[in-house]
Amino acid sequence: MMMRKLAINTVIVCINLFLLFISTTQAQETPKIDQLRDSIIINHFGNFKSMHIGYYGSTQNCEPYQVYALKYRNNWFLIVNAKGNISYMHINPPVKEKKIYYPSKYFMEGIALSFSHGYTKLKKRKRNVIDMDIYGYYTFNRYGKKIIKGLLYLEYPYYDKGIFKWKLDEEKAKKMLEEKAAEQVEITKGYSLN
Image (tube, rainbow, N blue to C red; front, side, top):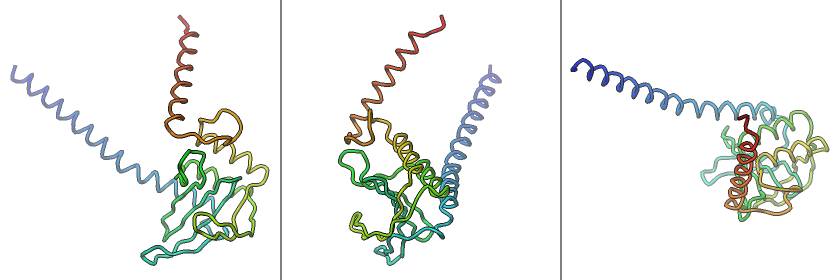
């Protein structure tokens, strides 16, 4: 009886140690994946050496930063490079009451790929975007427009027809997605193999 309790306690301790090990390794892998994704995006942009800098600025701590801008219709995609730290912004996103949205790295990787394949062209015009006077930004050619339209549909999947005909708030979008998922479940139940 005593040996059985000892064996059970040993198994429980081993399982807990295993779960603890898995959770710490997953927490350590997440930043590595983000850093890898950033390095892939930077490589597609050619380490920003061939890109036109749309705006120069400095932070409150007097650290310089550069802004690279891409435009599709009323949507601006800004890449801010400050001392090797890269951040991405989507200005005028199709989400109601949001002026700035921070897109996923997969979305930005798609934009970077379209830039590296030559689906963008440089416009040397001055535009005002969120208190920044951006001079020189990239627009998409006809192939790039198809790509960015598909990327926007993937990033914001809750639009029925047309691209950005109206803006939805996140609650309505989540509700709409849940309803569509429930419809899919009902359809799959109707086609069961039993």
